[in-house]
Length: 166
Image (cartoon, rainbow, N blue to C red):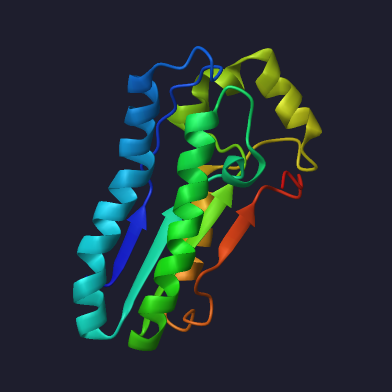
């Protein structure tokens, strides 16, 4: 195992006073617990091989918060903290752990929002006049996973198209 990319994510948005326990737990299970389980499974063979790259997709929401997304924000902040903690353990053994924190990307997760008036407003606020495309996010992941990228470890790359969301 050379490279692990943690890219699963779901939302179950609601105001905290209306959020169901199940919605909190489901987001934590998919967005944070899965990262833990996969990183734990990947770390041992990577350390043994003295090489490995772990890149986790988080979100700017993990640093900024977002009304109605307390569960999502907490899970993504947890991913950032986990990457930071694991990177120090992997580094002496030739491994890295990093994260990419995008703003809005044209994905299924954001489909409904981007099709709404709010999506038009997001595009208008962006210096590029659009949101990120999945292949642009993939390029950032590839850069962090590439040979020669070992100095980037414990890094969270802000990937927000100059929107300065953090």
